[in-house]
Structures are given as structure tokens and as C-alpha cells.
Length: 109
Length: 156
Figure 1 (cartoon, helix red, strand yellow):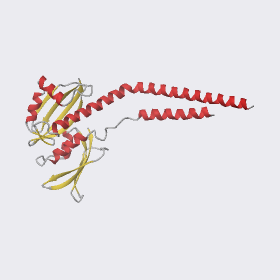
Figure 2 (cartoon, rainbow over the protein chains, first blue to last red):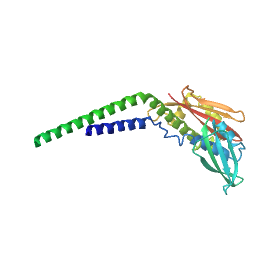
Figure 3 (cartoon, one colour):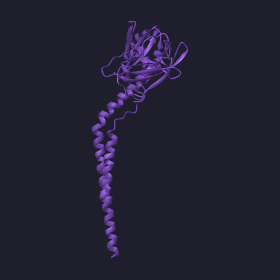
Figure 4 (cartoon, chains in turn cyan, yellow):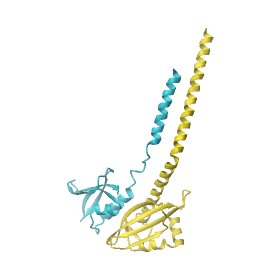
């Protein structure tokens, strides 16, 4: 009887081990686009550059969506060119010394 | 009678240990077989992820850390960047850059190829191109223009 219980137990352990090994390793998904996002944010934050965020995303071979809020969190502008389930990336830009909050989701094209 | 009971208990104990050991060995062998079957795909994936990290490290060194004189701000460069890319086509300077960017570290040697295309029509490239490179795209501003920089990293 105990042998049977051990067998069931071991089979469950085996199935669990296969399940764990089969899970795709996406450890770097969180930061995969960080450099691209960081560069888009920095270039968009550059006051000399007057290009839309969607255009910048396109130039970086990305697509996604963005929302820009003022300091009172009123929505000022938004845009979208694809469905993107990435985590939102938020940062602050200064335009004419007024801070704006930019929230964007970026996915690879 | 007691001896018989003790003998039976001992027999059951030995059977249980035997069954557990057999199952443990089968489990281990199955796992090894499964991992062997997936090892190549896993190795490929890890290698690709590593090259991605290396290309992002290069991007950070070139455009964030101000390690080079052309890097005037975060993701901001001046026209010296075009000259820098041209220099990467010189073998000696290319090797210096590889050493500077630690592309010989971690037991693996990498080649790098950088292409830039700017909205104002300026374009340049430098380094060593390979077919199976992992690429990272970043944007930089060069004076009044925006440039796309593609950094490719591949095993030497």
C-alpha cells in the first residue's frame, strides 16, 4: 500500500518537474525593451525634437500606445498603433518648463 | 508469532525502499532524457539572450555613460559619432573598441556591427557584419536630427 502511495507521489513529482522545465524562461521580458524605451523617452524629452511618439516608436522598430498627462493627471494626448500587452513605462518630460507624465507601452514590430 | 510479524515488516520495508529507489531512478533518467532533448533549444535561447544583453550593454556604453567624446548627453551624440563608426572599419581600432567594450570577456568572443541612419539622410556603419547577429535598436538625437542605431552582436 505504501509502495503504491510512493508511486503516485513520485509520478506527481515527475509531472510537476516536466511542467516546471517546460515553462518558457522569460526572465528578461521585463527589461527586454528597456534600452529602446529609454532611448525613445530621452529623444522625445529632447526639446529640439518635434516628432510624435508613434513616429519615434516606428523608427525604433516598435509599435505601441501612449498617453500624456499634465501635472494634475488630466489626459492631454494619447495615441495607439497596435495592441500591446507590455507593462506600461512611465516617465516625466519637461516642455517649456512644465512637467508632463508620459505613459507608454511598447512592443516589437 | 512475533518473529513472523517482524520478518513481514522487514520485507514490506525493503519492498518500499526498493520501489521508491526504482521510481526515483526512473524519474531521474526521464528528466535527463527530457533535458537532453531540449538542451540545444535551451542553449540557443540562452546564447541569444546573452547577446541581447551584450548589445544593450554596448548601447549603454555608447550613448548613456559618456565614455566617448561624441556622447554629449543621454542618447545625444554629435557628428563625431559618424567618424567613430568609420573608425570601426579599421581592424586595429575595431579591436581596441572590442577590448574597451569587454567583448572578449566571459569566455566568449563577440563581434559587433553598428549601423546608423538619420532622418536628415546621414548614414554610416562600422564593425564586422555577420549573418546570425542579435540586434538592438535605439534612437539617438544628433544635433537637430533623429537617428536610428542598430547594434548587432554575434559570436566570433
